[in-house]
Image (cartoon, rainbow, N blue to C red):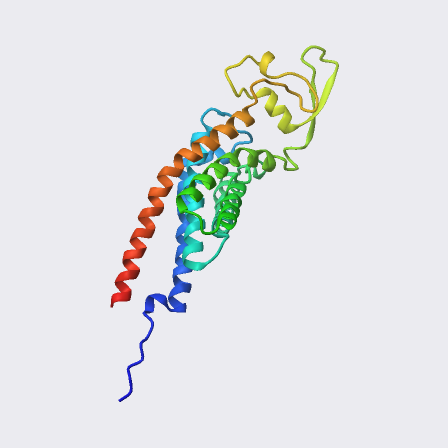
Length: 259
């Protein structure tokens, strides 16, 4: 009498894995979309972040709680090390389509004012950290990757601001001698005229080389450090989220194995 052939549960078949991968990717990039729209809103559309004091609280929670989870999920279930970057790429395509149709075409919003999101470096950092740490404790990985992701959000803004539009040179008259003009990019001019701290402009901003400002209060440096600290704080909530996800998946997998 022939022995019955033991078949693999349908939950582990290749077809189901492809379906699960597609569903996970769609869910992840849509979750990033909703979180960005609710938590960040129109900040990404500003030429420059005007409120540097609240920027760490607005941006850090998104990169510190989303990208480490994406990296872990895609590595655990699909053996992919670039889950966060892949999710960001698909989300970026969706975001550009929405911006073009609803902002530029329907409302005549200047396309030059639409900034590239500041999340790419954070997504890459979480994936690279996972690749380096490999099989280390997930809690330690989340702590490190969340801190790095938060700290890299602020420098990302400077990189994406160096667009042709932002680097277009303009002539700005000298405040003391109007007959003298200073040639500078538009972004430098914005740094001059937009207040970023409750410090008098004659103290925090002035003419100097290589930038047309000098300051003992440099917002980028302080904000990057604050975002790193905030990322470490959000790492605790991220680990709880991670534990809940994988605990549920473990119970579901065990159920299918016992059937």
